[in-house]
Length: 103
Image (tube, rainbow, N blue to C red; front, side, top):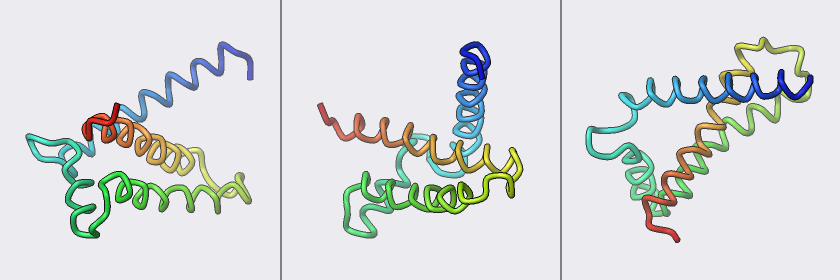
């Protein structure tokens, strides 16, 4: 893959992430707080919301860990879904640490 093809894939990946984040917004947030589910889950488990988020992300990481053992056994659609979910957790974590006021 040359650099131009790679940059096209980066842009496509970013666009998939944005679309999924917008679609999931209605499922996982209220009108006031986009990160409310992590705060609620953290409170329920008596852990910081960052730890709660990471616990949710691990599900996608472990699934990808299984998939990489035989990458051709999965469709590109399956790969896109798992990778996009995991990437979005890094975006959400980035937002969460800022929301917590970490400097």
